[in-house]
Image 1: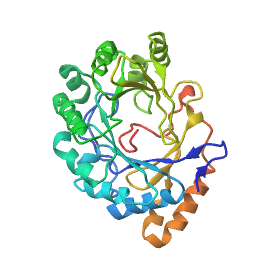
Image 2: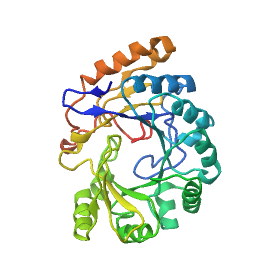
Image 3: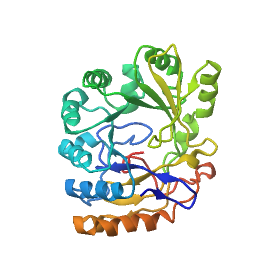
Image 4: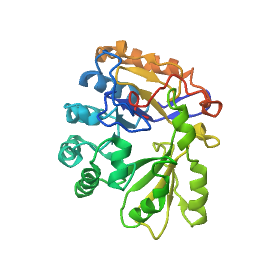
Length: 325
């Protein structure tokens, strides 16, 4: 069984947030640091396992664990193990800011993690600290080396490009992946409810970078069914690849294949949607999971064909920490 909406899109990928807390102060997301605005407890390990079971029944094959920063949960290895144990879940991925990555990653790998995304918005230590509020670039780079030693393949590094902060470092990023076998994904800065001025000052069009890559003989990579929205490119002279996530590009939503569940059990049909649907009451026991699956199917009837970012409508999203971007 595979989830499908009225627009013919199939959903095999779930982004599952396990916390809205984050210990970084990235200028494009939480410039004032994490502010706890909701005392609702985060999903327990059992509720997370049942969420994975629900979506596996609906044909989900890949679950990405996100935050906030997932590493802030001390039970993260237990969470990974619970998700990885669910029949039908073939990939368990994690997106992290890299906090204590060299120390924590072996336990995550042992628990069943198969894919790793790390956010590195600059390769210049001073600029990295200015963007994130932390002087930890070398820890992150060391964590990537640990990941390679542990046998991780398809490692992805995320960078949000911003005109006034790191866009001039594109040549340095490209030189880095000449010898570094990772997929470097440039993410277009997205407008939220509270960053209008910052967005106007810093948005960089992904389509312009794509045109530059194609002119330099980078070639498109064919996508797998569980891949996210990134358009990837390879070049025979580079060990790494380039990915572009361009939510402002034409037909971006046409290939949407993922849904989202927040750290408090709200089902979100779109990153920029107007509301969440409370899935949590149906995660109380294994006996209610058929009802949970029916609930997800019913909610999918409300999924729109596209977001409204081009019209300046960002939905209710003020930042991405609570739903994992």
